[in-house]
Length: 456
Image (cartoon, rainbow, N blue to C red; front, side, top):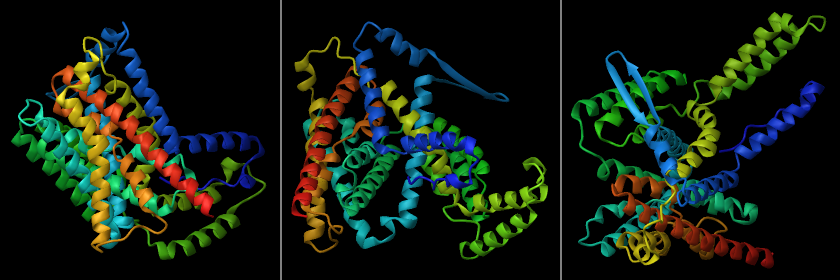
């Protein structure tokens, strides 16, 4: 997500310039995908360290014993902290994913079929081959249901690793990877909705569809204020939670219903702003204190209202959620879920487990091969072409990055395996494959960047 333009220091009071600079540095920090990636890695490593120390019983008990509850009339719900993170806070992450998908469909690569087909086909190949590898390795076994684990990659980690190379990678490669990860998330969302649901409750499911229908009515009635969507969106989340479908999907449904257009005619608002700015200047009385500038402040407030209404609701919501999701929700999810208990399991038990082999090979081999081969076939058939400035070495590097599963793969692991030991084995394979895939992908892309610098 792009940062907002900074306020020019020339219009600030001298005493607040330093404060403003501090706020600007904070904004730059919290909008760095690299910093977000590093924070998630630190959280995962911290969880891994804690879960293999004597503090383990207290660590596990904390997530399970702390409960949150809410009541509405005779309705009462009680949820553990672990489920609150996995079901509610992660719904906010999926809301962000849904907003990114909607943006790509309205203004990104997905609006141009010929450009969009390449990363979409690559995402499909990168989802199918890992699942096939897992199914082959676990054929006939009791944990064959974990085939969805190696299908998903981690959008934040992939873009964060690419960001480490800065401007040394072609802009077309960033667009390709962004669209690929968005398409990959769409596939993962579909898999979760169709194959990783518990027993469905028809009344709650009907209530969820009714809430979603109300959101669509809001959209069609040109309601651009976010509070009505957020209130009904929470009701939607509760209904989906009790319906048996995973509650995080409510975030995607909410994102699809929020308007992605401005309620202001953008071709006319510039003239309106200019007129109001002149009027405000005429209303300013240099002899009055700031709080007494009623006419002036009234004009400024009207400019503020129209400025706010000019920004589409999807962008306003994404901007509001960005820092909270990437610097709190995802690190907290990693901290509470990424730890693996190695005590009681030998190294040979882990590496010979069909689950570990299926997940590891699916992510490290299946994901990169699926992405690369699908891209190669699509280009060779003339259906699409590589983005400007992108070479096959770049595609190889990005394909390797596709093997970084982490957040999404751990998320599906929690849905796939009820046995804590099998879930720990799966998470170990995810972490190992993600580290190796991330390192290989980064080194390939760095090699391509150095070659390009040497040729220039």
